[in-house]
Image 1 (cartoon, rainbow, N blue to C red):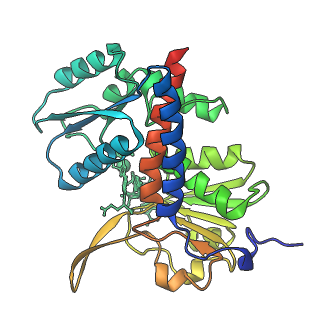
Image 2: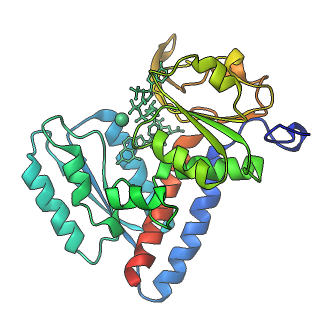
Length: 295
Ligand SMILES: NC(=O)C1=CN([C@@H]2O[C@H](COP(=O)(O)OP(=O)(O)OC[C@H]3O[C@@H](n4cnc5c(N)ncnc54)[C@H](OP(=O)(O)O)[C@@H]3O)[C@@H](O)[C@H]2O)C=CC1
Ligand SMILES: Nc1nc(=O)c2c([nH]1)NC[C@@H]1CN(c3ccc(C(=O)N[C@@H](CCC(=O)O)C(=O)O)cc3)C=[N+]21
Ligand SMILES: [Mg+2]
């Protein structure tokens, strides 16, 4: 029996998230043009509180991608000392605005603001991050709801790489609400056997070594090494870590890419892997939200 997740000779080892994201964006762009013929242009509101430089880069990228696919985007920048009630008031305005189909509040929020209260204030039909409890519950029950962008992007890469996922053992490292938990839910929905591990897990290497599919969402640079990987496994690296290098700073994932490369059947790079997919899936969710709001 072939227990490998993919036939190694059938694909490129480096999973090109940049390329797959371009495909997704092209699909979204075409669908947006169709909607525009009915006089509808999807709109995305991006809310950024504070001046975190990394967040500013992400928000800028989202706005650029939106323009490329014909989505109207509205950026709301608020000072770092914004209080919770004014943020909630802005969200209420966006909820009521028929021009706004999707609302994204860039995380993390300043410590003085209750993140959960803000996310729960977003109209679930405009919740393009899929973080509202109604959408989280829907995902858990297998209903068709707006789904978190990063895990959705990982699933698209996995489907493209592995084809059928049914029966494969997937191990997800990390249990955050924005990546690890929804990732596990989507893999379960795809009929994988799912193991979710975290900082309290015992013998994490042994658990990872049993994975046909390994998804790393930890936030620890190059933590996952060659001997954690079953030969022929597919490795999806969600981690984005900025580290000090000889030539300034550079981005690395949670997986030691060079160390793992020969062991894996296929692996996503950082940058150029999951990151671009996240933004592409945000555009897809904005399109989906616009359609849902048409009734
Ligand atoms: N490419 C993209 O589009 C995106 C990338 N990211 C990146 O993904 C990474 C994870 O993000 P996020 O989920 O928000 O991170 P969080 O910090 O919210 O969660 C990290 C998870 O990893 C677990 N963990 C920490 N240390 C270890 C360890 N030594 N062994 C096993 N598990 C450990 C934690 O366990 P515990 O729960 O026990 O504390 C926690 O569940 C980050 O690098 C982030 O920048 C995030 C979002 C999108
Ligand atoms: N409400 C909310 N939703 C999010 O989806 C969300 C968020 N808050 N807060 C921060 C994290 C992180 N995140 C990334 C998106 C794209 C890249 C991305 O495009 N990365 C490029 C590199 C970018 C660079 O060079 O810095 C790549 O991996 O190739 C990375 C990370 C979304 N997040
Ligand atoms: Mg987090």
